[in-house]
Image (cartoon, rainbow, N blue to C red; front, side):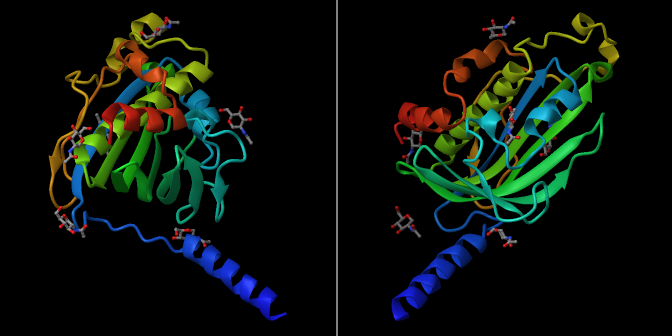
Length: 247
Ligand SMILES: *[C@@H]1O[C@H](CO)[C@@H](O)[C@H](O)[C@H]1NC(C)=O
Ligand SMILES: *[C@@H]1O[C@H](CO)[C@@H](O)[C@H](O)[C@H]1NC(C)=O
Ligand SMILES: *[C@@H]1O[C@H](CO)[C@@H](O)[C@H](O)[C@H]1NC(C)=O
Ligand SMILES: *[C@@H]1O[C@H](CO)[C@@H](O)[C@H](O)[C@H]1NC(C)=O
Ligand SMILES: *[C@@H]1O[C@H](CO)[C@@H](O)[C@H](O)[C@H]1NC(C)=O
Ligand SMILES: *[C@@H]1O[C@H](CO)[C@@H](O)[C@H](O)[C@H]1NC(C)=O
């Protein structure tokens, strides 16, 4: 009787703890901030992209099989957290903004990520945003992954987040048929409605101290520079990234 009560008390405590994760909105302690942006266009419609990424619980496109992601509330709702394990890290991400209007969108999902560690690298993400916008008269869609993070090594965290987000975007294109975006004209659409293109091919991120900062890195919107990342899709990318960076 006593033992079972104690066991329930501990179970409740564990449950309660998982339900009350606080993610600071600024970089605390020895953590410094950085911002990483990935822009990536796929030659598929907004609705097609939503069919892959439109459920917060379904992270198949990020390398997490069905039933490995748990929610503590209603899908696609502010305040709901998802938890999953990847590359030895326990990930807890709580929705801060969620908007998925019908085509042409835009889709806008922002969550935070509680502190997690991969080897010697620790980081948390006060702002991890994904937008999907229609371009080329609806025949293409562009991802914008923007993460404002805090890390004990901002350079390493930025590189890993960049790799993960790029791999995610490439995977969505692969799921939808594997065609690469080249131009609106190639899709029979007006060039005037083309997505913004990235000004440089520099990957990585700049670290600044204090609050998550406004520095960014961008990659070409086409699939050309993305190949090198595809080997490490999703969960694999985190482990691969950590290994490559030897953090
Ligand atoms: C789910 O977890 C998040 C993060 O800990 C918390 O903010 C939220 O209140 C929880 N929701 C419920 C319904 O317990
Ligand atoms: C911050 O880093 C310094 C120097 O490496 C270390 O002495 C200190 O304990 C660290 N503080 C925290 C809160 O980790
Ligand atoms: C999750 O999404 C994938 C497509 O990305 C789909 O094949 C799978 O059936 C979805 N899982 C559930 C449980 O809906
Ligand atoms: C990408 O999204 C961020 C906000 O999450 C925004 O600040 C930035 O301007 C966007 N980039 C482009 C090219 O629209
Ligand atoms: C898309 O681009 C990738 C990377 O450049 C390339 O490996 C792949 O063959 C391309 N796919 C198609 C269908 O052209
Ligand atoms: C931070 O990570 C980068 C990239 O992995 C590495 O070159 C650098 O030595 C690390 N810095 C520290 C202080 O560990």
